[in-house]
Image (tube, rainbow, N blue to C red; front, side, top):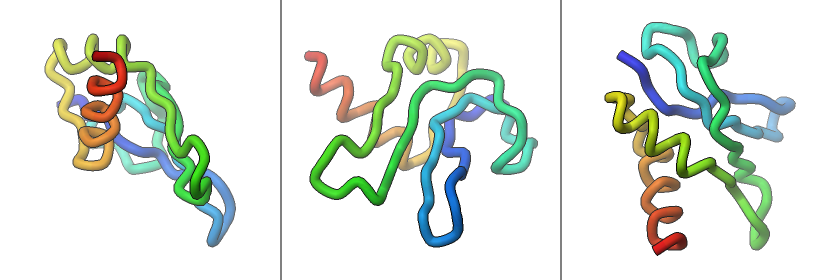
Amino acid sequence: MVKIRLKRLGAKHSPYYRIVVMPSERRRDGREIEKLGWYDPTNKGKEQYKIDIERAEYWLSKGAQPTEVVRGFIKKERVKSA
Protein backbone atom coordinates (compact mmCIF):
# COMPACT_ATOMS: atom_id res chain seq x y z
CA MET A 1 0.00 0.00 0.00
CA VAL A 2 1.19 3.52 -0.80
CA LYS A 3 1.05 6.20 1.91
CA ILE A 4 1.35 9.97 1.96
CA ARG A 5 3.36 10.68 5.08
CA LEU A 6 6.09 12.72 6.74
CA LYS A 7 9.80 12.02 6.28
CA ARG A 8 11.95 13.47 9.07
CA LEU A 9 14.87 15.72 8.23
CA GLY A 10 16.77 18.34 10.23
CA ALA A 11 19.01 18.14 13.26
CA LYS A 12 18.41 16.80 16.74
CA HIS A 13 15.84 18.99 18.58
CA SER A 14 15.21 20.88 15.33
CA PRO A 15 12.87 18.72 13.25
CA TYR A 16 11.91 19.48 9.69
CA TYR A 17 9.69 17.19 7.64
CA ARG A 18 9.09 16.52 3.98
CA ILE A 19 5.63 15.40 2.85
CA VAL A 20 6.25 12.39 0.61
CA VAL A 21 4.58 9.46 -1.13
CA MET A 22 6.15 6.10 -0.30
CA PRO A 23 5.23 2.46 0.19
CA SER A 24 4.07 1.76 3.75
CA GLU A 25 6.60 -1.08 4.08
CA ARG A 26 9.55 1.32 3.82
CA ARG A 27 11.09 2.83 6.92
CA ARG A 28 10.23 6.41 7.83
CA ASP A 29 13.34 7.95 6.28
CA GLY A 30 13.56 5.60 3.29
CA ARG A 31 13.48 6.49 -0.38
CA GLU A 32 10.27 8.18 -1.49
CA ILE A 33 8.34 7.92 -4.76
CA GLU A 34 7.55 11.64 -4.91
CA LYS A 35 7.98 14.76 -2.78
CA LEU A 36 4.74 16.70 -2.28
CA GLY A 37 5.78 19.44 0.12
CA TRP A 38 7.28 20.27 3.51
CA TYR A 39 6.33 20.88 7.15
CA ASP A 40 8.33 22.95 9.65
CA PRO A 41 6.84 22.71 13.16
CA THR A 42 9.35 25.25 14.52
CA ASN A 43 7.95 28.05 12.30
CA LYS A 44 5.52 29.53 14.83
CA GLY A 45 3.28 32.26 13.44
CA LYS A 46 4.63 31.95 9.89
CA GLU A 47 3.94 29.50 7.10
CA GLN A 48 4.36 26.07 8.71
CA TYR A 49 3.71 23.81 5.75
CA LYS A 50 3.29 23.71 2.00
CA ILE A 51 1.75 20.88 -0.01
CA ASP A 52 1.14 20.45 -3.73
CA ILE A 53 -2.59 19.76 -3.48
CA GLU A 54 -2.95 18.75 -7.14
CA ARG A 55 -0.37 15.98 -6.81
CA ALA A 56 -1.83 14.94 -3.46
CA GLU A 57 -5.27 14.63 -5.07
CA TYR A 58 -3.72 12.56 -7.87
CA TRP A 59 -2.15 10.12 -5.38
CA LEU A 60 -5.37 9.93 -3.35
CA SER A 61 -7.24 9.00 -6.54
CA LYS A 62 -4.70 6.20 -7.08
CA GLY A 63 -5.49 4.80 -3.60
CA ALA A 64 -2.75 6.33 -1.46
CA GLN A 65 -3.62 6.58 2.24
CA PRO A 66 -2.60 9.80 4.06
CA THR A 67 -1.48 9.79 7.70
CA GLU A 68 -3.51 11.81 10.24
CA VAL A 69 -1.21 14.85 10.10
CA VAL A 70 -1.08 14.89 6.30
CA ARG A 71 -4.87 14.42 6.13
CA GLY A 72 -5.21 17.61 8.19
CA PHE A 73 -2.92 19.52 5.81
CA ILE A 74 -4.94 18.33 2.81
CA LYS A 75 -8.23 19.40 4.44
CA LYS A 76 -6.82 22.87 5.20
CA GLU A 77 -5.59 23.27 1.61
CA ARG A 78 -8.97 22.23 0.22
CA VAL A 79 -10.64 24.92 2.35
CA LYS A 80 -8.10 27.55 1.23
CA SER A 81 -8.60 26.77 -2.45
CA ALA A 82 -12.42 26.62 -2.23
